Amino acid sequence: MSRLQRYKERLGFAIEAKNQKLAAYYLKEIGETAEIITLKVPVHDGQPIADNIKTFLAPAIPPLERSLTAGDWGAAARGYATLVESCNGCHVQTRHEFIVVLPASGEPPHGQKFAP
Image (cartoon, rainbow, N blue to C red; front, side):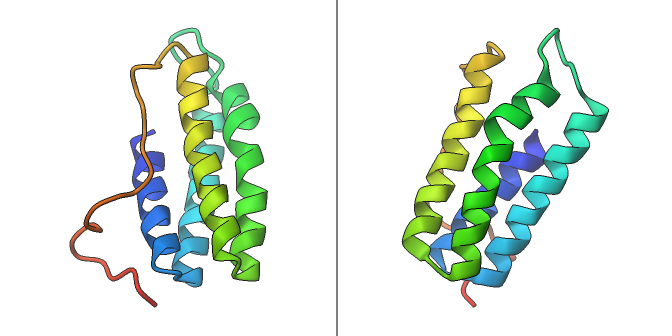
């Protein structure tokens, strides 16, 4: 999950910088990481993690991918907000409502350029 959070944050910075290739890359990484989690951790602490990823996270990815492909930054920002909300919705569903992820904000991580 921490990898998903890291990619989510970097995706937000890439969208903010309007870096289409970088944003698409991080969105792809989110999808691949989610797929790995569903295969390796279908259930954790009695919670159906794989099912919840399919219910909450997976539906948020295609619209965001389409907006990035189209270069529609307004739609991408809204799609990103939906993706963040899907993470928090899953946390509530799995009784981890105390884990609240936020959209990327502040200074981007050091050691990476986000502007195209």
